[in-house]
Length: 121
Image 1 (spheres, helix red, strand yellow):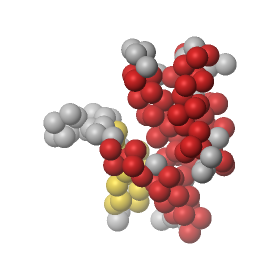
Image 2: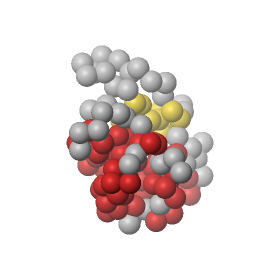
Image 3: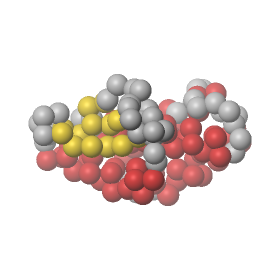
């Protein structure tokens, strides 16, 4: 299902973002013996359902991209911006997102390009 390298990549991303994954009530990363790693997002507040289609993860990059997008949306909410999509951020908003993501991305330098790709140029 996964090469050793793919498995190690995904596990590394899970370790780096472990506390964020555990604390975030709206998504999770789970293991299925049939499908492998699955990213579940859009978990309902009552935890009775999922409103987004599950994403079968094949690489650490896939997982990292999903997590940093969620983190960017959370950061925007924390600073009072009322939109979930970081694509159209102001330069100050981009700076704040990059600052918040830096400790994680310092541990995952192979995925730093994903932070830049969050924003529309």
